[in-house]
Amino acid sequence: MSVLVLGGSGQVARALMAQGDDVPLVLRGRPALDFDAPDQIPALLTDIKPRLILNAAAYTAVDKAENEPEAADRANHLGPRLLAAYAAAHGIPLLHISTDYVFDGSKRGPYVEEDATGPTGVYGASKLAGEHAVLASGAQAIILRTAWVYAAEGKNFVRTMLGAAQRVPKLRVVADQIGNPSCADDLAAAMLAITRRILAEGFQPEFGGVFHASGTGATSWYHFAVEIFRLAAAHGRPMPEVEPIATADYPTPAKRPANSQLDCGKLERVFGLALPRWQKSLARVVDKVCAAP
Ligand SMILES: NC(=O)c1ccc[n+]([C@@H]2O[C@H](COP(=O)([O-])OP(=O)(O)OC[C@H]3O[C@@H](n4cnc5c(N)ncnc54)[C@H](OP(=O)(O)O)[C@@H]3O)[C@@H](O)[C@H]2O)c1
Image 1 (cartoon, rainbow, N blue to C red):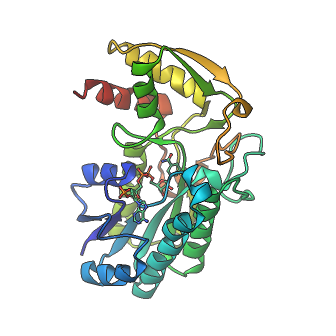
Image 2: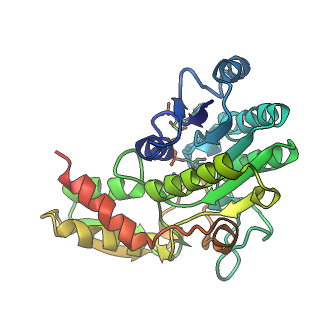
């Protein structure tokens, strides 16, 4: 029986498929799995009969979501609710991914799982509604909140910065938002380690609930960008001037939390897992992007 990965060509879904050779993974994305066509989902699940579901599909366009709240809700709340209902009815575990943007950013220091949520935008609110629906379903559910996800492929800050540096000599980057850059490969490795454990020993009661799962170490978008360019310079890439700016100087449709650091101690205590330091994984990803033709 297979482990169903949802998320098509998304960063995390791709990373799962690239690493899960020893796990019987089956990938589905749009159009076969489309949260905008929910009527098709029960038949897809019945057809595949997964023994575990890894949900990495989501509406992730944070700013666009402000104008498309229904689409964000369908993908981030109603879709996961449907998956969780199936998981509950069939007694199979569901690993679902959520976000640091469920927090309002007003805390000093890293957030723990029990901290009060308070999303500042539509995307975060839709992901939080998804968390609540999954937890309320009665399914054997693990929710991994991650943050600032990047990979050598896909749409992300690292690739955006490297692309911009090819075009302009100077960039302005927000320096007063702090978070944990998380490499999709590292998150996928943690998800697969959890999957292997469940397949080996069954779903233990302590596995259920919310866990924080982000890269180790915190930084600002500005310092993240500076590190990207420092690493890329070793490959002969241009090193633009980077000006630190305040959030107020770069207005976006969605308000983002000023501090969304996640304390990942629970993931380590329960599963013995910690994602690597963000600088280490970033070096690997920048090498890969710069080596690509
Ligand atoms: N990216 C981040 O910085 C970040 C931060 C915190 C948490 N997360 C969470 O991490 C998880 C994985 O994110 P990611 O970075 O891998 O995202 P991603 O690269 O944007 O991929 C998302 C995937 O979801 C699919 N999708 C979007 N809307 C859908 C719908 N209505 N029905 C079915 N599939 C749909 C997309 O399909 P198409 O390829 O067809 O568009 C895409 O394959 C998500 O739960 C996200 O909320 C991400």
